[in-house]
Image (cartoon, rainbow over all chains, first blue to last red; front, side):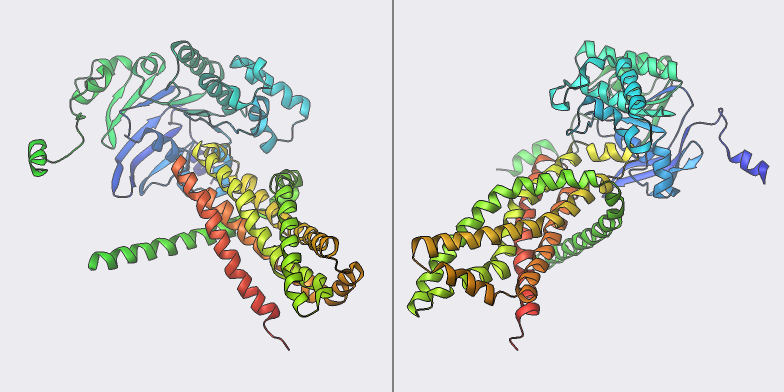
Length: 277
Length: 261
C-alpha cells in the first residue's frame, strides 16, 4: 500500500507538468491535435508560436480553466481535469499566473492587490501580511507605489504588481502569458530580469508563453514551438536556432510568408475579382 | 423556407440553452450565499453601491410619481365629490403597484445595468479569470454579495419610494388643491391593510429584487468579454428586467388580489 503511494508521488525527475495527447477545439476549429509536452521542475520553459496557435489556451488548460476534449494534463502528479473544485483550488494556490494585461482588481490599490491572495487563503496577522506584501513589492521594485490604484499604473508597472501578487503565496510554478507584449525596451528588460531572478532564487518552475523571440530565447532553458495544434520543434535556444524546420525558421526570423501563409485561405483572387463584375 | 425554419430552430435552441445556463448559474449563486453571510462586509459594501447610490433617483422619482397621482386622483375623484379619498388612492396605488414596479424598473436602469457592466468588464479584463487562478471563486466573491445586496436593497428602496410618494400626493392634494389633511391621512389609515396591501407590496418588491439581481449578475457573468459584448449585456439587463418585472407583476397581482371575495 505504502509502496504504491510512494510510487504515485512525483519525483524531481518527473516533469512538474505533463501534457499527453491533448485535443481541444473551439467550436469546429481545432486548436490542439494530439499535443504532448513536459515542463520540468525548476526550469524556465517557453511555449512559442505565432499568434492564434493556442498558447494562452494551453495555459488555461494547464490551470484547469478549460477542459480538453481528449488527453490529460498532470500537474505535480495530479490529473487537473479529474480534480473536484476544492482540490483544483488547492492546486491553484500553488500555481501563480501572470496575465497579459496584469488583470489587477481595479477596485483595490497596489498593496491590497498583492495582499489579496493572503487575505483570501491565510489567517496571517495584519503585520505579517504587510511585511510579506512589502517584501514582494520590493522584489519587483514597486514598494513605493503601494498606495497607487491600478488605473494610475503604466502597463509595465501593472505587470510587475501582478507578478508580485502571483508569487505572494510562494507557488511552485508561475505561468506567464505574453509577459513582454506591448512593453518598452527598458520595461521588457526589467520583466526579463525579474522572471530570471524569481526562477533562480526561488527555484520556481516557470512557463513563459510568448512570441517575442529575442527575450524568450535569452531566458528559456527549454522551448517548445507550437503550430498547427502540435509541437513542431523543441529544444534549447541553440537547437532552435539550428533547426532545419521551415516553420521554426519562418517564426524565428519573422518572415512574412512560408509554411505559415501570409494570406488567409480564400478563393482564387482573379476569379473573385471577375465574379464581382 | 427551410433556412427560415432552421434559423428559427437555432434561435429557439439558443434561448433554451441560455435559460438553462441562467438557472444553473442561479443555483451556484444560491449555493454560495452561505459563504457571503460569513463575510458581511462584502454585502455591506455592495449595499452601499446598489442601495445608497440609488437613493436619490428613487427619492426624486417617488416624489414626482406621488405628485402626479395626487393631481390625477384629485381630478377624477372631485368629479364624484370624493376628493377626500385622495389619500387612499395615492397610498394603495403606490404600496400595491407603483412602489415595487417603478422601483424595480429604476433599479434595473441604475443599479442593474451598473452590476452587469462591472461584472462584464471584470470578465473582459481577465479579473474573474485571475481570481479563479488565485483559487478564489468569483461567484462567491463577486457575484453572491451583489446578488444578496440587491435583494436586500429592493424592498427598502420600494418602501422609501412609496413613503415619499405619499408625501408627494399630499403636497399636491392638500397643499395645492385644498384637500383636508385629516381626511387624507385618516382615510388612508382606515383603508390600507397591513397584510393585504403592505405585506403583499413587500413580497412583490422582494420578488422583483430577486429577478432584477439574477438577470443583472447573470448577464454580466455571461457577457461576451468585449466592449460590444458588455454593452449588449447591459442593454439586455434593462430590457429583460423590465419585461420580467412587468410580467411577474401581473402574475403576483392576480395571485394576491385576483379573488375579489
